[in-house]
Length: 75
Image (cartoon, rainbow, N blue to C red):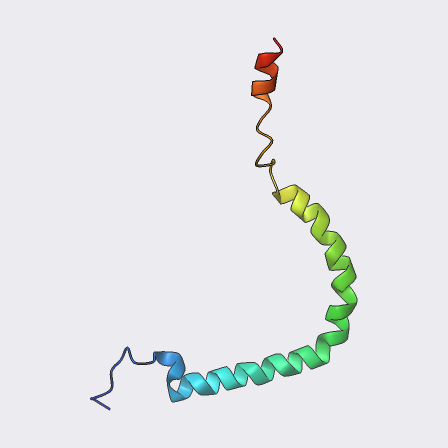
């Protein structure tokens, strides 16, 4: 044990890390199987909810500028 390099694989490549990854994979599988109908049933609503959220968080357009240059030319 004293000869092991601590940087060789990290914690996730240790025995407890592999057991944790296995447990999380099994838990994710059963969560998906039990709640698949609920998640896929909500998918159309989530797609429509995405549109207003994108408009809310998307502030301005990159190529359009702020419009001040157009007003200066016409004055």
